[in-house]
Amino acid sequence: MKLECKGLTAGYRDMVIISDVSVAVAQGSVTCIIGPNGAGKSTFLKALMGLIRIHDGDILIDGKSIMPVRTEHMAQLGIGYVPQLSNVFPSLSVAENLEIGGYAKTGASIDDVLELFEVLKSVLRKPAGKLSGGQQTMVAIGRALMGNPDFLLVDEPTAGLSPAIAGTLWGYLKRLAEQGMGICVVEQNVRLALANSNDSYLLASGAVRLHEQAADLAAREDLEGLFMEAELQGQS
Ligand SMILES: Nc1ncnc2c1ncn2[C@@H]1O[C@H](COP(=O)(O)OP(=O)(O)OP(=O)(O)O)[C@@H](O)[C@H]1O
Ligand SMILES: [Mg+2]
Image 1: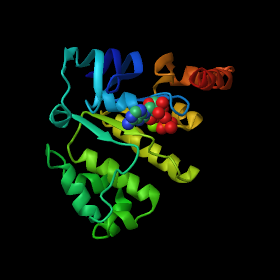
Image 2: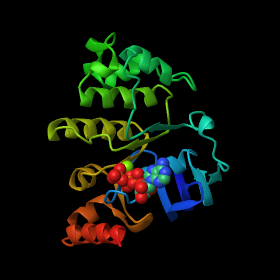
Image 3: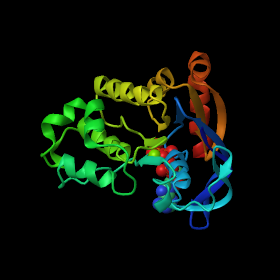
Image 4: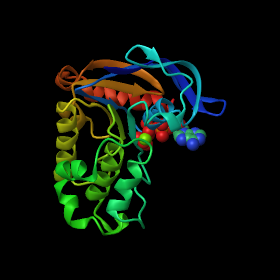
């Protein structure tokens, strides 16, 4: 199964931020979206989720259009989303945060989530806001997993975390892909993203600048130059 968008053009009200973006996310693999600050990575995920205005293009699951996209239908369609910021309810307990995730569509149990994120077992009754950054990210991902999604969209899961915890989180995402899920991750750490992904897209100024197998992109000697070019493109 595949989640894809074709020629997606979207933004905030009349302002277009991403243009003609075509991306495919296959089940059983990890696709990363990299690009400089302000490139439109978060905007891209928000467009897929129907959170912002789509001006043009199509979003399809297994070749079937799901347009017009309705955010409230995405869980039913098998798509989970972990936004970049404010992704846990800080005053609710970890268990409550997870239970909320099963509200739109059940299928997974808290036990399934705890099998993956074992470290959350001992903090289930703690307010999520009192956990470490890495554990809060696990709660946010766990909440999305409670809907038993076929595809998971994750926006910068490792921002602000130590390299060790970032590596651990990527390990979890890869494990989910190995179990058959289609994972799409926006990541600011380019090397980390490429080392852990199958497919990769470089976004610059709201457009796909490059689409390559992650291993191929990681092996390119001009990778840093390409990234700087993308950065400059955003500033001009
Ligand atoms: N709610 C909003 N209303 C208007 N413009 C916005 C809004 N959110 C983001 N933008 C603009 O859209 C552009 C892309 O922002 P976006 O957050 O998608 O970038 P990003 O690639 O996720 O960057 P970062 O790496 O900093 O998270 C930026 O110019 C930003 O100012
Ligand atoms: Mg962002």
